[in-house]
Structure formats: structure tokens, C-alpha cells
Length: 520
Ligand code: SIN
Image (tube, rainbow, N blue to C red; front, side):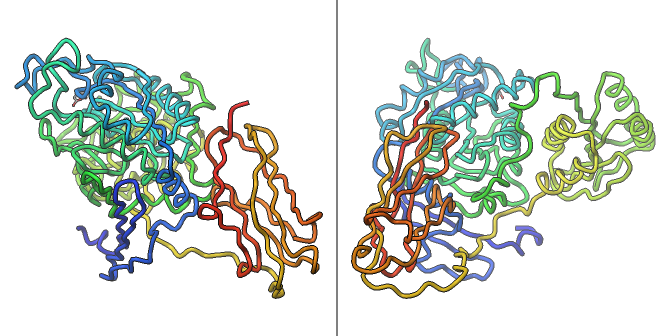
């Protein structure tokens, strides 16, 4: 662990199967959390997502398949390196995992493509984001399968662009699936594809990475999209997160998370999403952004050529903390004069680049290939380089990991008087509940006939307070409220809390009433 990281708090969430046996370890203090510390990630939205996954009824997971070695057909059962990537269809691959897979989730698939990872353009990346968003309208999580060569770029692109908080898990394989005419025939000896695909579905279904953005799951390890990189051409443990290590791992029934991306801290609010909603731009808005690699006496003609070819942004992967040869530096200065934006990164693989300046954004410790994607999106979404510089700090270089915070319950504005004989029970939500239509909920107030009801009921949807109503407004013992319309279909958790809480008996099924919001 680096010096920088050792200062950071580390948390561990061990979730046995899809259940909720959660263990938290505060490694910054060396203290082991008590078993009562049921949740490390304090977001109510996060907790509800995980709890919902453990509730009866299968979560739904969609696999969006793009190809790669996972879907590869080998020339022989003992051949790992000679194969045609992107051959078998995802429906065929998923069938090989049944019936066990059916016990994990209701899984369907979208065959987005079936090629090598390097064959995908940025325009296709945009379409992939839209396909993932579409799937997440009805599914609880999405698994994206790709080739491993550029999987880290797929992952970071999705991390930057998918607006849904639901889990997106990317996976693939280092060895082809089979050597037969179909995926069921002649399985390749020791192939990693089936286990990776199975674990990825398990992770998406379990919701443990809700609000994490996109994570990469391969070789039993879970990695943050921002951190992960392919480190070896052939080994099955090729993916690593050199600066911070993997987020966690899947050991058969146990999914263990040692830390989480910093964005989890924003899980309860709208600030969680990035500004890069690609449904608001067209393919023509996607600029040409390239990478120039530095080395001894590197020529400036590389930058000149890229600019001549229409690049409006260039990431330099410099030596050490961002160094360029004299001719490369001169070419960059000239290009800045022509309005090209640069991001300075390092070819070392880890470590910070802090130098910024006129037309130059500091890449921090973002890898060059990922800085290129953030620069591309920045150019697509703003003409203001100051804004782009901010995004490279807030989005490109957030704190490395989430630090668990305390759950802060808002204090009531005025202390509530103690009330005896009055409580609120039985939350009911009128059905059917449809997208864009008002939601009516009722709460029965007992004791209202004998004493003047005092207190209030707070309604929450998916952990966020949406309405607080005084019990004065109850009529004939029934409090009837209209809750905010829902924009998207899916399962929502509605809760009602009576204050003062001591007399509340609102606790049917963990206090949450699960409601399916249907399409209109
Ligand atoms: C590819 O990236 O498409 C080929 C290599 C792989 O999937 O492992």
C-alpha cells in the first residue's frame, strides 16, 4: 500500500451469499467493527438496494454482450491463444450456466455486437451507453461482456457516462470458451469465461456495487473502473489496480468489498451522476481526441500530425511527471495556440502529474487512455477549459476511496410533544402505480378518535424524504397523501415514519413497502 493510501480509511463489507451478514473493519484505526455495525456504506439508498436484492423474488440482470475472448471459439480444447474472438452468442453462453444461473437472477441478454474489443469506435461506445441505460430501465443490474484488451477503456467510458446508479459490471475472459460448433461442445480446458460470467451476474444481482459506477469483475476480483488496467498479455490475473488494489473479490458465496469508489458518498442525491449524459448529444458532437507518447527525442510531428488530422484534444503520456522532448513541447505550444486542449499524464503507469497551464490540464494520476476519454467527453460537453479542468479534479481525480461517514439523522425543527394513545400504522400504497402518475399512500392513525393527534409522518422513497405531513390532517383516522410521481419504471421502497417514533408501529416488512412502478 502506498503512503498516500495508507492515510485513507479502509472498510470491508463481507456479504455472505445474497444475504446481509455484513462485517465492517475500520482499518485506518486497526479496529474491527462490532457485528452490530450492519452497514459500512451509510447511504440509505445503497442499503435499500442491497436489502431489496436479498428480498424474496429474483433480481433481474441483463447481459449486454459485445464479444471478445469470452465468446471466442478456439482451434482446440487445449488452445488458449489460437481462437476467433466474438463467435458464440450470449444466449448460448448463458444457457451453459443454467440451471445454477437461474438461482442467482432472472437473466436475459442483448447481443450488442460480437467482435474484438479494439474494433469498437467511440460512436459505438455512445450507443453502448444507451443500450446499458435502456436495459437498466427494467433490470436491477447490467453485465457488459467485452474483450479484455481495451476492457479498462470500456469500463471507464461506462463509468463516466451511465446515469443510472444501478450496478454495471464488466467482464470477459483470458481463455476462449470452447472449440466446438456451439458453446456447449468441446469446452476449452481451464477456461475462465464461465466463472467470470457467472460471478459478474452474481455481483450485479446482489447490488453490492450499487452507486459504485462501473466495476470490472474478472478472475474473482472486483476493480474500480477508474483504477483498473490490464497488466499482462496472457495471464488470467492480468487485471490490477496498481495504486489502490482491487475493491474486493468474490469467493463463491461471499462477496467481499474492502473499499469503494468515492462517488458512493453521493449515492443519496442527484449529484451522484456525471454531467456526461450522452443521450443529450449526437455522434457528430464526439470530438477527435488522441494520445501522444513521449520518449527520448520524440518528434513533434506526432502532435502536428494529430492536429492536422482534426484532433481538438491530445493527451500526452510524458516521461516521469509529464515530461516531453523539446520538439514535442514546441509542437504542443503551437497546437495550444490553435485551440487544442492538452492533458498531461505520465507513461510510468502510476503517480501524479500536477503541471497545468495555458491550454494544458493536469491529468493527476489518471491513466493516459482514461484521461483521453474524460478529455473527449469534456470537449463534447463544454467549450470552457476552466470547466474541463474542474472536471479533471472532481470527476477524474476524486479521493481514491469512499470513507464511511456517520448516518446523520436530521434533527426535528421543534421538539415534538410526547403523545400517548396516538400512533400511525399500516402504510398502504394504492395500486396500480405507473410512471408519471401520482402515487397515493394512506396511513391509519390510531388513537385519533380519543385524543387530538399530535406528531407527523415522514414519507421516504428509496431512502430520500419526499414528504412530511402533520397528523392534524388525518381524517377519520386516515392520513392520505400524494407522493411524487416516478420518472422510471422499477421497484421502489416506500416508508413512513411516525414522530415521536416511540409509539410508531409502522414496521411491516422492515418498514419498507415495496412497490412496482410500471410503464404507462
Ligand atoms: C479482445 O480484447 O477482444 C481480445 C482479447 C480478449 O478478449 O481477451
